[in-house]
Length: 113
Image 1 (cartoon, rainbow, N blue to C red):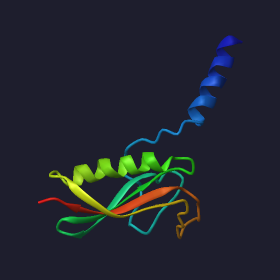
Image 2 (cartoon, helix red, strand yellow; image 1 turned 120 degrees about the vertical axis):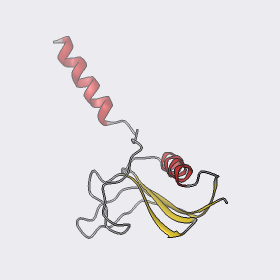
Image 3 (cartoon, rainbow, N blue to C red; image 1 turned 120 degrees about the horizontal axis):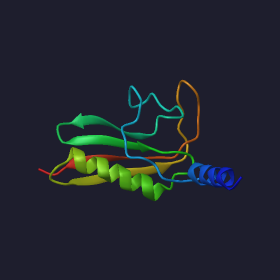
């Protein structure tokens, strides 16, 4: 009996966690998202040293966490540092497959020379 109560409590806490794993989003193009599991980063190269980077989260993911994950991806793209511009936070994502409401952040990233 105690073990089943423990398992139920563990399940409740794991479902309510706001932790979002750092990963590439399972999407085909910058515009074509989101489905339930399509969370993560996605980028589109605009020029040699400029990227449009997006980090898609869940409806309850804090924007601060999404911004931190976006900067983590930017650091991987720009080994000598970067300048972030046109940063935006939003709570709605519309996909052609199924409209959903998920939080995401995006920004234009210019890599330092």
